[in-house]
Image (spheres, helix red, strand yellow):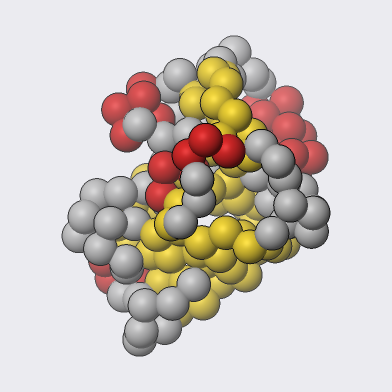
Amino acid sequence: MAMKGRCHCGNIGFSLHWEAEPVRIPARACDCSFCTRHGAAWTSHPAAVLRIAVHDAARVSRYAFDTRTADFLVCAQCGVVPVAVSRIEGRDYAVVNVHTFVDVDPERLQMTSAHLGDETEDVRLERRSARWIANVEWVETGAHQA
């Protein structure tokens, strides 16, 4: 299954390819203050392929907080956060915000809440390397594409 998403203005876009088409797309609404304030709900599949396309890198802000083990890609123009990336042992792992999907039926989303604030940094990085998208490709382009 191929899914696309982007920030509101299209500066940050992505395409997500899952080998098998899921009937339901799991989405985790983290209860941290950042995700709550941005209304983010994240999905990932370890075997998926994620391609992140950036139109203008100067308009992308990377925001890290708390343990500083993940960067939230915030579009500096429209303020939307479509992707979060964690660099673990020299490799990028990522999750995508399901609220930034384009042409995906919201009925397919299986929303759950997640409380991750009690994790140690080691447990957090182990969870991400096991559950987040491990095949992340970056593209900087002069045209909106994903």
